Length: 311
Image 1: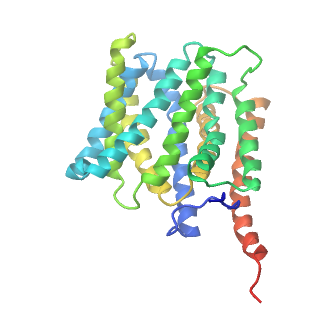
Image 2 (image 1 turned 90 degrees about the vertical axis):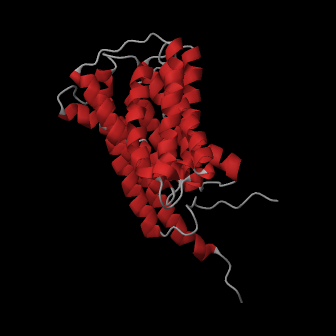
Image 3 (image 1 turned 45 degrees about the vertical axis):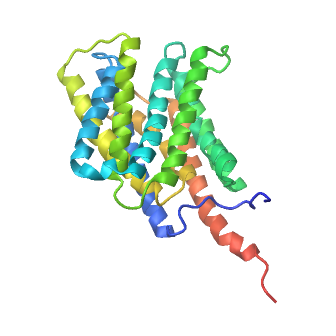
């Protein structure tokens, strides 16, 4: 079988343009929710180790969705799909956390953001969906923005933490790709509930191999509850709903907005001020997302006109 011709990546055939636009809007909301947790999580990790925080956070989210899904989450297909997605989701968190031991946070942020390139590449290699050349322009701009925004120094020699962090980026890319293919259009709650239980269980399994510290301060408890209910249960359910209606590449690009929104939240709360590097990097990311979105619509309109007309 010959490789497919270049075409704009599309969601499920039953998804209309208006559905994909609504899904993109939902993903922007999800990204805003995740961006708002950066400052909160940073404070919480001062009172507890990462895996204790993850275990408690995802336990809260899992209990919430289990109460809603009930017996539906025990269907065989839901268990298998949720377990696979849960492993990918946990891999992203775990590899990124381990990588931070020997990788500066700026490099970690940039390397993790490589999923914006990995998603279309892996999607092309695994599923034969080749993105149009026009979309790569937006991806390139977003990647340049991530590099600028993070202030990463790539001139330093590679470390083992870099490889671990890259493993986290690959895990996030797989999670985005397979969520698009496995998420149902209806009743995503059961699927996400299984994912959250898997992440919770694997986080608990990591506790014997890390330094456990936990001080239940009001800030820590508040972060666990907010991240459990909002950033995990609600946001991941919205992501699954959206990805049944839009493409993995579009989701990856929209998720690039997370550090931009996190920076704006931090400025709004008075924690930091944005300099030229932050404005330039954030602007490139926003422009890259806009270019990719616009190129998809222009390509969809232009390509039919290029098809040969029957005589």
